[in-house]
Every structure is written in C-alpha cells, then in structure tokens.
Amino acid sequence: MRVEGRLADGRPVRVELDGPRIAAVTELRTAPDVLVLPGLVDVQVNGYGGHDVNADDLSPGDVADLVRELWRHGTTTLCPTIITAPEDRIVRNLRVIAAAREADPLVRHAIPAVHVEGPYLAPEDGPRGAHDTDHLRDPDLDEFGRWQEAGGGLVKIVTLAPERAGAAGYIAELARRDVIVSIGHTAAAPADIARAVAAGARLSTHLGNGAHAVIRRHPNYIWAQLAEDRLTASFIADGHHLPADTFTAMLRAKGIDRALLVSDSVTLAGCAPGDYTTPVGGRITVCADGRVTLPGGELLAGSGSSLIECVAWAVARTEVDLGTAMRLAAANPARLLGTDRGRVEPGAPADLIVTTPDLSILRTFVNGVPVHDA
Image 1 (cartoon, helix red, strand yellow):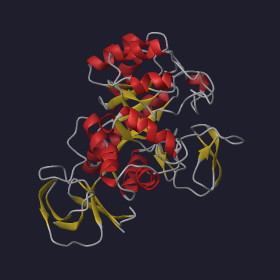
Image 2 (cartoon, rainbow, N blue to C red):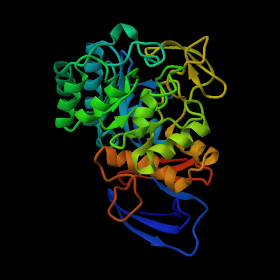
Image 3 (tube, rainbow, N blue to C red):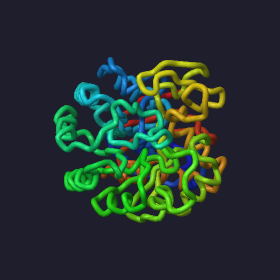
Image 4 (tube, rainbow, N blue to C red):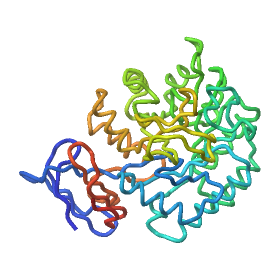
C-alpha cells in the first residue's frame, strides 16, 4: 500500500506500507496537497463524543467505539484515563478495558496502557479540579496491586499529589515497577516536588492546570516543576486551559524534548453546546466555544478538544511549527510509553494519518490497516 503527500517538514514523499510497518519513504518531485503524518499518541483520554471510560456501565464495546471515534480524529494510540472513583469502579473499568483489548487486535494495538489520574490528589478547590472529593485518599500500594491484577498490568501512568501521606514510598515502588508516576492536581510545596522527583516521579500532568486560581508568585508548585529537568510535562493546548503566551513560556522553559501535548478530552468533547450530566463532575456545561466547565463558573472540567485540534491551535496561535507539534503529540508521548511509534520512517509502525493542509483528517491507518477514510 502506498500513500503520497508532504511530511510535516514539507518534503513531498511516497510512503510504502508493508503490513504493520513502514517499508520505505521515498522523496518525490511533487506530491498531492495533503499531509502524511504519524498517528497521534494521546496519554490522557477520559472520553470523547459521548463515550466515557469512567462510566458506571462501561462495556468492552464502548471502549472499542471510543477507539474507533478517535481514529476518525487522528489519534491512533491512546491511554484511556480513569479518574478518582471508588476502588470497585476503577477495578471494574480496568477489567472492561482489558476485555476490549482482548477482543480486538487493533484495539489492543491502539491501547498500550491505561492512565489512572487520582484518587490520590489534593482535596482543595482548584487543585482538585472536577475530581470527587468524597473519593480522594492517600496512596495505597495494595490498591495499586488490585488495579494491576484487574487490568492485567495495563496501568502505566498514575497521577498523584506528592504531598499526600506515603507518597514518596509509593512513587519509589511504582518507579521500581517501571510505572510512570506523574505529579498533578497538587497543592504541594516545592520540597514535596523535590522529594517526589528524587523518589522517581517522571511526569507533570497538564502542567499549569489542576491548580489554584491564585497562587503565591514564588515559590510555588508550577515553578518547581518547570525548573526540574527530570520531569517531562504534558500540556493541554486547546486555547482554554492555557493562554498562548503561557503555553509558549512554559514550553520554552521545559524544552521540546521534555514536553508533550495531551487532549484530556472528556465524554462531552465533540458534543453540541448545552448542559449535561456525567459520572465525572455531575452537571457539566459545554460552551459554544468548546470549553467544558462546571455550571455557573469558569472552572474547567476537562477538555472539549481532540488532540489534532490541540495541534492545530498550537501551530496557528504560537511559535510551534508543524514538525515540532508532531514531536509533541506523537514522537514524545510514544517515547514516554516506551514504544517506537510517532515517526514516519522506514521500519516504524504503520500508524499514519493523512490530512488536509489545515489538519482535517482524511485517512487513518492503524498498524498498517486502513481504519478511516473521509
């Protein structure tokens, strides 16, 4: 199978697929006016288009439907993200995700890992975000063991607030097991951040969000994470979570190699404006501009954007060019997960998207299989 178009750097090419791998990338004199890009890798997906991985009645079919919906939007690899909830719901939904992977090889390829965001988060308004305060608790290694048993070892990322009791020991043990511990939804002192990093924390979850509306100018937990080179940072570049100047400054501080984009999309992402009720946050408002908020205020309740929309916003509104944006949304998160995805090179996995110049998705290939054609 062959695909022709321009790479992110503008070179016209023909990309030849041989089963699940890219066999060759040949430069051409001319090519169709489309972009051939690596499939996007999103390590924080709560849901999209009415599909919710935190739903009480989640089924394997729901998980597969979410994966297929995201293929239409250019995301070929995702980490379903289970958030703060009673343990029995977390365990149940991990089992469901594992069952969905078992039932379909392409779904299994698309979901290499699960991200659990919480329940070990700060209880204060602001840092807590839309997480249910009734189910916040301190880190528990026995509970983590039950998660891994339920999901067959799928949990690869855990977001926590490092100021919670027992966090340092928990982080050290998860790091020993090669699980990525991420700092997020925290009100931590800089010393707590330093202890977490020393214990093995490697990531900051949607840095600049899940925070107080007003914080001490310095020191604070945002500066401490920005300055720590051992932490990679994820950013929600949807135009609502971070203004363009804030995103630009944070990205410059962190550096391209230590940054990645996530959607943090929720079940109502892609849905019509209006008021809804969901398992996460209860009553939620989808605004006309795509923001997803708790009713009656400006507090965000996740993102209403897909990852390709975040890429498009970053390219249009900041100094980030398309090649850099693709590193942030494909190569860097793929590397974080320990995979070789996120590249258009011979030998790389054949996870590709073909888009218009303005990044509308035309075709999607997953593991060499055409899964979407607009």
